[in-house]
Image (cartoon, rainbow, N blue to C red; front, side, top):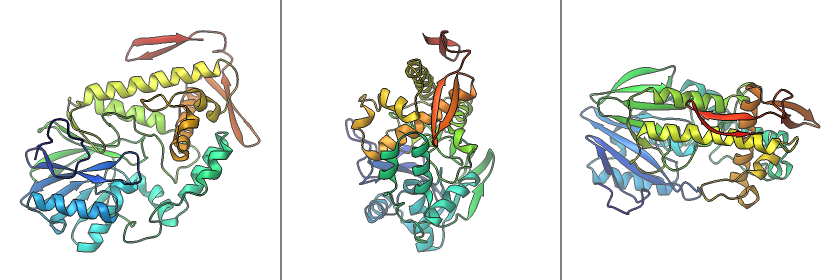
Length: 366
């Protein structure tokens, strides 16, 4: 079934995106993303799914209805290739594996600490600590009340059957998939490229209309906590080196090409880095201070107008931009009463800083 012109990508069903491949949007009723795409790959040996959806009743019902519309049932699934450990991608894969006892669930090795944090139900504490260091105590208090849905529930959260490591190729239903480790959104994120068919199952690494959150993962070491944006930009460069592919994202429609969208995402972060420097030109500030001076989402919202969850993500992502600017020598960081404060580096203060992307200057700021 092809998506009619003008119809939302979130509408339920099974939509053919290539020979033997269907996109199945599943609901996220309490999430602003509204739906997650699960991709069904058909073969004589059984069904393979890229991602599994969120283990909630609405999703389970929609998934079975969509599979039935193309002549299948959840028990026909033999494997789940999960792009990353977030609940809307991973938990229903575990639930269906446990229900039918057939499907093999595979996940990136570097998701192990994050999954352990979920199983221990202590991931939210880590984010609270991050927000305090960012200078956002009110948000930290609000996040302290957030409970990770499904923690310690073996029906929804459990270990995978197989761990991915490094970049490699695999045979799936008569097609060759190149598994590419793309850390950034999470430590163990993977994308899967079918070069012969010209497809990129991009998970949350390359999304068509929004910029993925970066580093929203628990279980990071102190050093790894500062690395996600640098990792994300490096992962975008890896995907850019692949042929230009049709993007099959976890959230959104399937009209984008990979090269164009990767270029847009890299430019976005270059501009955000420049804007952070521009804010700090006025004087020292915390990540929360800088985030409050920036605009958020394509609607250009102020930080104070975002809900607490998205405001927290915005502040933590701002901190990642500041960490990267510090690593590049543009900023200096100090800590006062447990809060990180940034200022322009001595050799940068008073001089122009060029903001570039792909050899092209986007602008100069003081």
